[in-house]
Amino acid sequence: MYNKVILAGNLTRDVEVRYTPGGTAVGNTGLAVNRKFKSATGEQKEEVMFIDITFFGRTAEIANQYLRKGSKVLVDGRLKLDQWTAQDGSKRSKHSVTVENLQMLGSRDENAAMGGNTYGGGEPQSAGYGAPAQDSYSQPAPSAPAAPQSQPEPSPSIPEIDISEDEIPF
Image 1: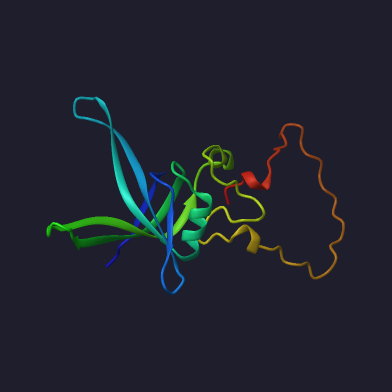
Image 2 (image 1 turned 30 degrees about the vertical axis):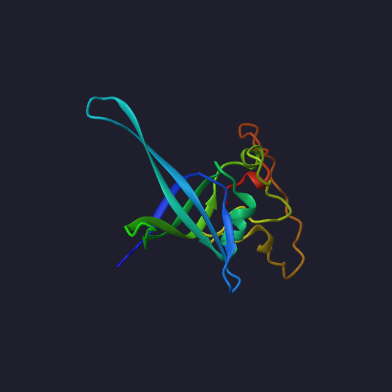
């Protein structure tokens, strides 16, 4: 059996973190995912879905530190059915997503404008999807001093790109 959900959307509220008696962080929030489509009459419509999501461990702590209401995220995880009995005795249930991987979308400036923390000091921008955290990546040391190599002059027809490492999405 296969249970995998991938969603991209905006957080509906700030991440609420609690800790289990064993010290594991558990973060809860909601995700708004919208879909635009044309109806049979040709009218442009939009459908919004609200999904509860749960983070665990270090991912919950990172989400709490860097994400705020309105933050754009991409999450993947597994669908879970929560069932309980309400105070009035009625049976209740809802679907939620247990997040296994989190990727923060949007720019640093957008997150700062929302009152969130900016990413700095080598903190990871995303957790999951196999991408190493920025502070855990190091270049391999050369085994011998490299011989000076002549760099060809850039061709006048190819413009140079001025981009910082922070703007590279990978």
